[in-house]
Image (tube, rainbow, N blue to C red):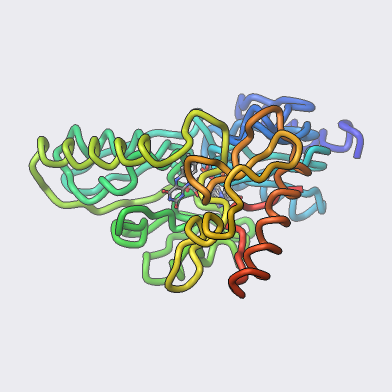
Length: 302
Ligand SMILES: Cc1cc2nc3c(=O)[nH]c(=O)nc-3n(C[C@H](O)[C@H](O)[C@H](O)COP(=O)(O)OP(=O)(O)OC[C@H]3O[C@@H](n4cnc5c(N)ncnc54)[C@H](O)[C@@H]3O)c2cc1C
């Protein structure tokens, strides 16, 4: 599709003074540092703009992609044909009211954790160090160290077609790295999180401890999208990959981390095809050697 075909989208974005980018390299917006150019990217700056753009895209059949911090994405080397709706720093306000934090979907999870700490609110310590946006975290039901978003989310606002609605957590279908938002193609615009009053020093101590664990165990010195595979029932993908002798398995610039077998890393200018090559090799070998079928946690966007 030629850029001119996006003129209606660009007019809407201009009306809201939103930043419009053409042929933006998606590798600049993914923690994997992988992904070719997208046709158009709009930096979302308010809920009304997001709603109008999604409604227009649906009406006209223009493909659109919602992204947050791109920390769970593997984007095609060919890039994305369509409009990328980027929920980032232009859409990231965080408001604290007693024990409730309400934030725009583009707010960083670490920023929300920081706000919780500053207000002596406990419950989000598990999320400190997960490098995504709040919208992405709810969509994925992100979790770590025994906690998950499901435990702390109260409700969210979201776009269904051209309407903005509100949903309580019990209707979100939050399970292990799954939610209703994926199935229904709903876009989350803001999230309400309920925490408990706690002791600031204890909260900080827990956050620091968990961050140190990440630094010790995870290959944070290389670009990645975190755990490549979902945890198979009763086991860990990393353990299975390690016992199959797959640490260090490489394809082009992508490699199974030698520090943590659950991570495929971008070791040296890897392409999306390189990563897919490593994923395929790992899946096949683990299936052959252990009988376990691994499923990707990382989402392919193409
Ligand atoms: C080093 C590292 C460590 C990680 N550790 C963890 C961990 O401990 N636990 C964990 O669960 N994950 C972890 N992750 C993965 C990732 O950080 C999470 O999945 C995160 O929640 C993704 O958020 P995001 O904003 O980056 O989403 P993106 O990667 O931008 O998008 C992910 C999906 O969410 C959708 N999406 C994003 N925002 C919205 C929205 N507002 N409305 C609707 N859909 C939306 C996108 O369309 C896409 O399908 C890690 C990643 C890295 C790189």
